[in-house]
Image (cartoon, rainbow, N blue to C red; front, side, top):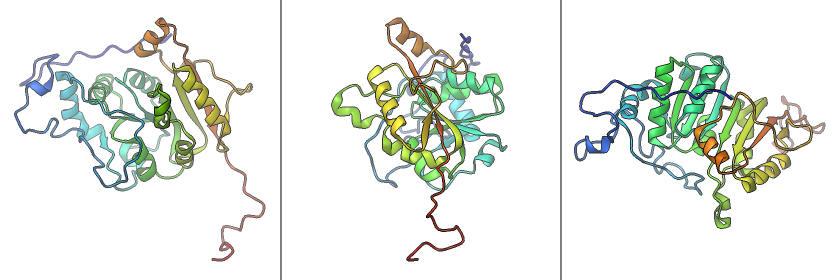
Length: 287
């Protein structure tokens, strides 16, 4: 089992006491993080949909706040839906890019990025303390291959990523929405895969993990049925937890409660060209 990365202890910053929420130190009417992530970066520019996440604005420590203020202009990205991102420009290199949707406090993300410096990680979440913590970890570990995105991952995928621009996608422990009436809010749905598939290069791996067994079964069913993905497991089932995915504190707590964690690793396949499809230099019939 991989060792977890300890959260660095930041030096005290002017105006803040370590461990004290910034909500008690900012003046009335002042933005929470003037140089940090925006509360609703996409605003009302795009149609509202059923959200698969719940924005969380819990307590932000002084260290996390300092990281947000200091590092967001350098390593942060607000998902506003305006324009396609040049990933090579965002990271300053042309290394492969993996998208991670929902990273919690960022410990596993930072550990995986440190273990694989040749891969860039674009990590998306709406949890402000987690955003600050991941930035703090990346700074502490000297990582140059992590960028933190704030906002709705669906808008990012739909509006801001070019076709075949991703070499992988990670969705670890998404909200299971356990009540039946909320199942429509689960992220892994056929419509989500339709959106994801064009953004992944052929051979890219979609890696999901969950400790909610009914959701795991749904994931397996949906992924198996989608024509753009194939299971990497010969038996068509769940995969053993790969060594490169760290065991997080959240996962450990679930295991202590008797939860079963399932990993799914599916490969983006190259669809064969139809024999009756028109040549790319010829206009389609009726054009």
